[in-house]
Length: 296
Image 1 (cartoon, rainbow, N blue to C red):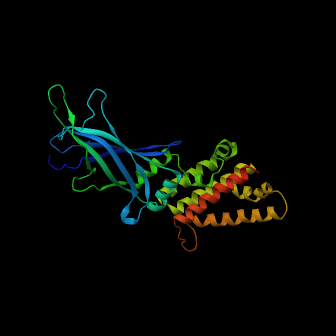
Image 2: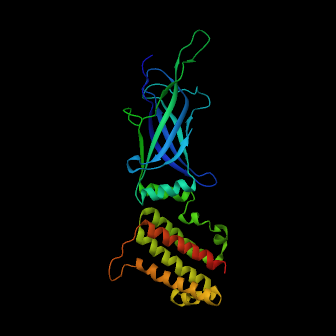
Image 3: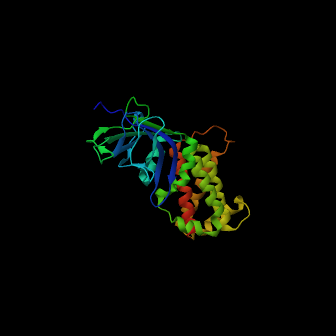
């Protein structure tokens, strides 16, 4: 039997599934370019971030799942008119998503998928046996047939729309009591502004993160003090800290952070450069302060 040609894999669409089992799912088509049918006996995949940029491994295992009609043989038929369907299910832990976000730094998401696939050619058997499997042969999946390299790019705009479906936010790493914060009646507006900040972070809009966090911080002050505007509300936040030396220092932190948030305004006397690390710090401090103040 001649050497096997690599099965061609083509991406149809991406899907995101949220908690409790986060996963990025690549729906795909599989094409058999050999003159005989194939049975996919096994497939082991390793999924990395862009190798050219030193990307880490984020998932490996039997991640490929072929899909067949219940009434048909589980066989990949040859020819351009016969295309099988499958899914690559990439589990995403909190650490994996954090690695993705740090690596792409607000840009597109590039994944590198390496595969080891066991294929069994199928041939016509003797009388009474319609199909017989030959011994398995190792192969790989390929995008173009020339190599086993599968490089997938998810544009920034598409990835930003997938992140909410994964139920992911940077503030998840803080292990805040999100159920409590969601139920707090006076923080609804602040929660929406924090969501805006998370979206700005995913888009790589670093100044936008500061602006959204400033709006969230002002909404926290208004919501907790009952004042109509943030200028009246911010001075009254100190009442939530109690009295004494600790309260004075906590209030000083709040006032200093408020000044920092205003660096995101466009009317600064000189431009201020922000990067992802500045934005992540800002988002996490804002969320932590919201949590602290809401429980006072």
